[in-house]
Amino acid sequence: MPSTFSPEQQSLTPAEATSAEATAATETPTGAWSFLGHHVHRVSQAPLQPEGPALLLVHGFGASTDHWRHNIPVLSEHHEVHAIDLLGFGRSAKPAGLPYGGSLWRDQLEAYVRTEIGRPTVLVGNSLGGYAALAAGAALGPQAAGVALINAAGPFADEQRPPTGWGAIARRSIGGALFRSPLLQRLVFENLRRPATVRRTLERVYLDRTNVDEALVESILRPSRDAGAFGVFRTVFDLPSGEPLDHLLSQLSCPLLLIWGMQDPWINAPGRRASFLRHAPPTTSEVLLEAGHCPHDEVPAQVNAALRSWLASL
Image (cartoon, rainbow, N blue to C red; front, top):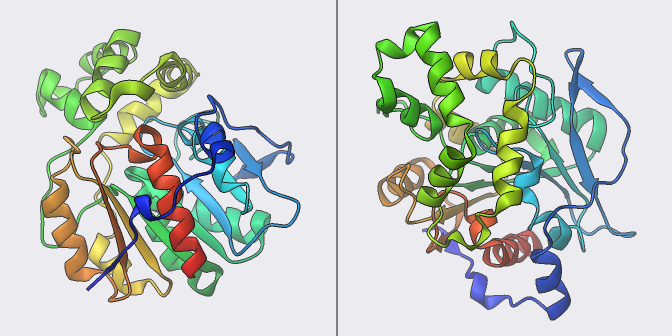
């Protein structure tokens, strides 16, 4: 049976609570980094004497390093913390012709850990970023000190999952077959990057809407205005499935933490949790939260406490 870390067991000090409510993460200049010759945006923050392994935070579809705005200030009080924008998202490059998908992002994360962090690292990912973090964690072997998945996306070998998130919204708007029309794709893209659409979508996936604020909406809108954003949009919605989650879990050799927002409307969290537990290592730990698809931003104090408690046990 998995062990359970209760966020309530580890309370935050007033100073930590203040940091957790900061509106943006402090960016420490770390110099330019590129992968496959393309610019990758990154953020890092650390105390003078970091404890334990480093952390690498990986955002979900349509998000960026900004989505860790309430986590980096708290986690970096004790740990060396990094966050990067996956190619095609955030402030990272969005070049045409790249094979966007799990393999690309796995390789990007693996390269960053090996070349830029250079020591054992815990990978923490939400949604699509959870899939990429798990794939990179399996590829890194002993260099991965742990993997923490927050409502992770991706298929299991024995299931055909319908598209979720932004892809599902697009296909529901015009239908799966019609979605292949470039003109209709463009119309859907323009609609999805309207401020009202972004806010309405976020409000559907946050149980507590307190943190659905202007900063969050703008953090999603800004990358959609970049050159190449439409090309990434068209490519990503027709991604191949990638290596199944159960195969990746069988390759994982480090501790695993599963954090679930149990009221996630984009995935069947109770059913998905059961699928993960069928394939996860016996030492897997869990945290169950009353939250939606992005608990790290919706209930950050609880997620920060859960991560810190689990990290202390590694």
